[in-house]
Image (cartoon, rainbow, N blue to C red; front, side, top):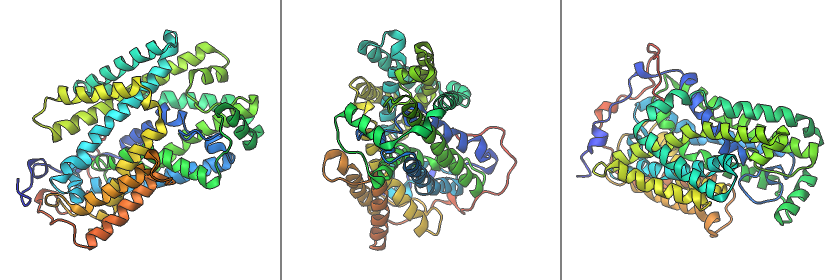
Length: 475
């Protein structure tokens, strides 16, 4: 394939027409809100996935909520908005739009193939925590957890590969389950919030974890950013696919403000208040709000705690299927000659390994990897968008070195704290900044490859008002 010729996956791509698009409250907002209502996100919110005693409550409820709000707004404005506008203005999916930043050959791997690979990491996380929630129903042994994790990942992968349309029909309503559970637990613990003391909470965490120092104000905010932005990074880049189903810029903005920022604040904030209220009322130090024992204590009934764990696991099954579905589509596009049962099967085996070994339970490690991988992607895409005059520049030939070099350096910065190279605070955000700045510098230095003509994607503008579609394709 010559660098000057568009590959089929780009030349044959057709923009999503205006008639197929729908308002933000029918696609973008509810789908993104469902992501943040996934119990794996909010269950670990108070600890930030870390080991510091007191977690993000080290400096009190106010600072914890401040860090939460800052991170939520960063997710919307830095990681989601530009990809969403890319999708709106082009009507094209991420793996096509990404060719502007990484080239028609490079874009085959980044972000398309990388997105697919990382989905199996999410499948492993889903299988691990869902098996933890379900294991108490079968005696709570480690053997039961392993068996459940294997079955969970395998079935989700199969459904994602073959029958995602059936899951999609019920997935719209299942996020209501964790929302109701969060509301119930907030009501149950509300009376103890006024008696919460951060110093006592940190002291209790020292006894639990053996560490001696809680986080400072900056450390709390940085941990919130690491946890939330790392969790959201891939979904932020996928904003292109959401944007191509939006009707206008207002829909892109509102979909993110409600589905990303507000949903983050509601789900994460509820979890923070539950932990603070439980400690204030009974002095019990606990961080994982979706833990069956914790929920049993809140509800005053082991049976109710197990039932809530079962319901949370049921609500988590569609996200597991969607992760598999995204991975399968990515592999079908980037590895067209490989049987998808083989490629998805290998990925599922890796997911199972991550789940049964417990590696998937290290959420801060997982979120750091995700943020390191997609932080520089979102940063470079933002600069690419702005330098092109707030539009898609079009596919670039071959391997766009400005994109690839900025990604490599940004990824190294994002991974630095995880591999012990350096203590980089808010690493996913730093990876974003490095990717953005370096892309700008390299582009100005002439390291962007030439833009290839793609008539089907021009001219670019937000679609005009069109008859409202009865069904959204945002899923």
